[in-house]
Image (cartoon, rainbow, N blue to C red):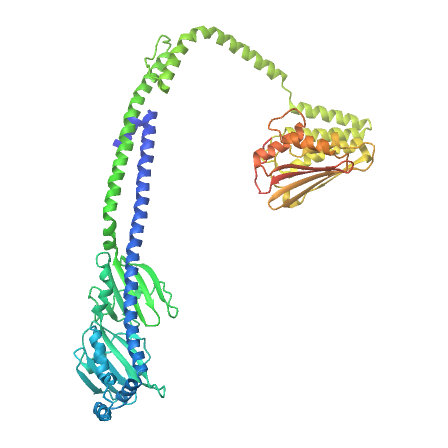
Length: 617
């Protein structure tokens, strides 16, 4: 209710206030919309930047894990390159430890005391070089021994007989190269640290190429955090490494070791390209207000998940949002307050002009507006004052002019011709000619009457069929006039007859042929009108076998068609050509080709789309 009263009091009868209100609404909505789009663009850019940082950190983790896997493979490859060491490893795997000790003693007494070929020394050195190793195990596939060397270089060989353990079944299963430690192996070596990941590499006999067993290495998962040292200040959220079974191999925040990752099912929806030898990347915004990146290593068998809460990423652009809101509020204030001062001033001056006009309407011709400013309202005020100064002088002249105008309108009304009267008169003359036996004259009068009706009639839609019908009526007059000396043909496909065209765009061309091209000394005068559609352009070809046009005259015609203004010559052709180009574009119009003595062909080009505006005259 209060808003309605305010509108009626200040805006309903005040044009400037309505304009100001409308302007203010547009400005406010524009600034709000622009601010929103700017904020959306910046926030999306910030989100993408944070996700790119997260993705780069994930790639760093992937490189670290892949590097650790390569280092284990290098350990095995270096073992193969040392013939004595390779033979000792093969003996170590396939025999009990006391047998291996006896074997080494025999080597020692046989002057083969190179400690670099000792299996345990070789692996202990490697543990010294890699402090993230927690356990290094050799499993014998034939004897089902599990030899364990822990981080403290404490060695123990366990029997993993299938009757007492599931370890042989675990080792026989095909698994990815990198996975979570198996529970049966953990129990056997008494290793329960949850923050571990396992790398498994097969050990083959170098001579027989048969599989002797497997090398199994447990590494500390927390060491993977060193790959994130360069991202501590910029990384949002957390990075988790999952095995193929969904077990947590690494958690940058240490919350999910020994547990199932809660967003595992949602990450399955993330696009990834797991082609062999490549890691796939995908991004997914989960239903838990979480942005998720996923990187999959198909060969090594692990998956890296980067998850960042929406609120945490939003903190990165919170300051920008507040800045945009502040700037938008200031812009709205400036855009509304300053124009309001000008609008109020103009409204007051306009009200003075309105009050002045009311005085004049009530007969006070002595009233004047006192406004000496040079803007539009000042000019209007001075114009009103000047008008009032001269008003009395023009009263008598205006009355006389009105009387003269009424007399002129009366004369014009009396001089108008009723088209129905003309049609009826032509019909009387035609019936008279028919009754006197002049049938050809009657036919000519009938064609003229119908042609005149079609030209005078105002149709909202003027089609190609209408234009060709007007041409036919015109040609019919001259076919009757010249009897057997002249004939014509009109070829119009039915599917093109409904297209709209410009009125009187073909009749002047036909008339031009009758005036300039028809040869009365021959009996085979022929005019052909053919309609075609070519590449979305409607073409009407008007071909005759008349006199033709000489090159000199053709040059004059083309020059006249391209004149910027009419010179009084060739009104019909130039009118058609100019109107087509003006209405539809420079590629439309008429094209003339002619050979003296052989006839002329005029091609009229229209736009081929249905519904083109053809009602222009």
